Structure formats: C-alpha cells, structure tokens
Image (cartoon, rainbow, N blue to C red; front, side, top):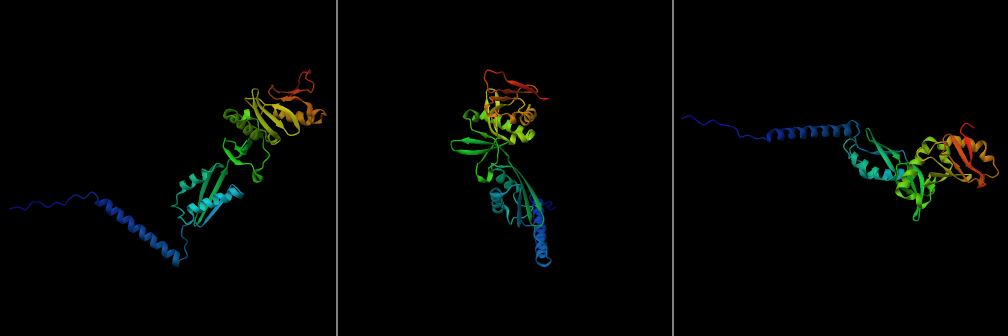
Amino acid sequence: MPMPPRTRPRRPWYPWARAGLVLVLLGGAGWGLLELGTRYLGLQKLVIEQINVTGCRGQRQAEIQRLAEKLVLHKPLFWFDAEGLRNRIEALRWVRALQIRKDPPDRLSLVVEERQPVLWLVRPDGVFLVSDDGYLLDRVNASNLNPIPVVVDPASQTDQNLVRLINAARALKEKQPEFYARLNELRWTDKGPVAFMEGLPAPIYLAKEDVTKNVPNFQGLFVDRLAKRPDLDQLRYIDLRWDDEVAVGEPEASQPPTQTSGSN
C-alpha cells in the first residue's frame, strides 16, 4: 500500500524571521567592530559631544544651546530626532528657520535664522517688537533697543492697519534703508501710511500702493532746502503721493502747498 506524500506545512513568517535574524547578526557584528575600534584602535564613536549655535547671540543663543543639549546631547549623530529638534526650536517666536548640520565625528552645528523686527508696538501692557512677517516678538528691553519706527496710534493697531504698516515698514527697510532708519513713528490713516521723521515735526504722507514713491526726491529736497529753513518746525506736512513731485505744506494755512519736481 503506497504511503501518502509528505508535505511541509507552509510557514509564511519564515522569510521575515530569517531576514530579521540576519539584520540582528549584522547589527551585532557592526556594533562589536565599533566597540573594538573605539577601545583598541582609537576610533571615535559617532555621538554628539559638541553643539555649536550660530546666527543669534546673547540670551537667545544660550536658550537654543540649553534646549539642544537637553534634547540631543550624547545621542547618535546620524540617528537622533532631527525633526523633533527643529520643531522645538522653530516653535520659538523669534526663530524663522533652523539649519542643522552634522559634522562627524561628534559635532552638531545649528544655524538659526532670526525674525527681524521692523516696528515697535506700544500697547497698555508694554512695548513689543513686531517682525517683518507679522509676529509679535519680545518686549523691548536694553538688549534689543534698536532705532526702528514706533506704532503708538490706537487706530493704527487694528489687525488690518497693522498688517499694512508692517508691509510698508518692510518695503522701506529693504528699498530705502536710510530713510527708514530716520523714522520715529508710522501711522495708518484714511490717506494711507504717514511717517514722522527725526528732525521734522511735519507728517510725511506716503503712497498707499508704492510706499517708497518719491522718497529719493524727498531726501534730496530735505538735504538741499528743507533742512536749511528756519521755519522747518512750522511746516504743516510733506506729501510724497504726487507723481515725481513733493508737495510741501507751508506754515501759512492760506498759502497753497509748494510742489517741487523730482528733478530739482
């Protein structure tokens, strides 16, 4: 009588178990070689022993240093949670972005990009820095006391008007930095952005669409003529919204404004 054929039972888990065993053996062999190399051949482990922070200074640099050391110091250089570190640091309001560099055998370099303040915002609960992308940053103190325009007028602090002033300040800082550096205050009115400059009490009306319009003409006019006038503090306004002209409100209300061509 013939015997029934003998068949092996199917074991679908077997290839996975074999692959897992191979990985364990290779990992163990690699770890053993690394231990032998570090102990007897002077090789260094790829472990984070140094963290260098650049792109910021003072208290901010110290804050990033403490946070990074707490999260990744003594962790494997190529196996630590880089995204977790990035998320924790970029969660700080003053950090715009973080670049992480791994420098074998044991160094981690962090390059921080800070948000740049363009305005001071004066509120009942304090004076705050406002960044060029609209973030409310630190309170103003001796360590961040930069000469930038202030927003004091309550009507200019509504969400919509404040965004407009942030955009105006950013454009002036990028395209007309000398003029921006001399501004004491910015406001938003029905006429558009209004600036107040050091040494000139009169308001300066800026164009809504192109806030830098006629600013170079005004700077030339101010240096050549306006700054030399004995009645400078009595001028009623400076209007830069005209095409290639600067309108000057004379002290006497009955006199029409003086329009100066941009070519003068």
